[in-house]
Amino acid sequence: MVVNKVEVLLARRLFLRRSRNEKGHPIHIRFSRIGSFTAQDIGIWATKHLHGETIVITDGLACFSEFDRLGHIHGSVVTRGTWQNPQFKTFKWLNTALSNVKTAIRGTYHKLSHDHLPRYLAEFCFRFNRRFQMELMVPDLIKLSAEALPIPQRKLKLAEDWW
View 1 (spheres, rainbow, N blue to C red):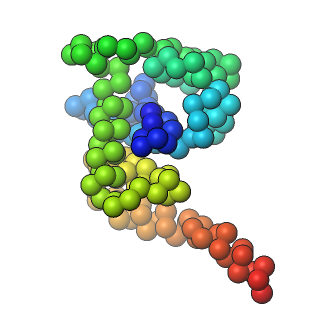
View 2 (view 1 turned 120 degrees about the vertical axis):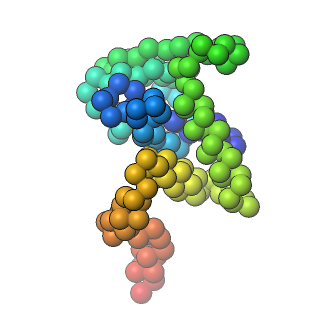
């Protein structure tokens, strides 16, 4: 997907036991900013985020054939014109999540910074992935904050070099 002219890969778990709640809504999603929709960038993403023979279903963009080359089970669905068919639900939740993140970013930030886009997407995923367990949000945020490296690493490095 392209979010304001920035390439973003959106994924959700499909066939895992805990991939959906009792109403069929997805529990987890992942947004990842990628350099471009090329086989090389898709390969880098897949190597980092997919394990074993993952089943991957895509919209058939040519660069996604990289999943086959890496040994994943890849199927593609041609989506041209299918949005008009109410029976077509393959990418329904991904499209809904993409629409929601675009609306959230436009409604929250005055100016979209491409440098900080991964942070905007991470914030959206954090909230989306915990929306059925709201009581875990604050403890998870505290834990993840305590484990995270400071953000301005390059600024700290420059300050060390200056001394």
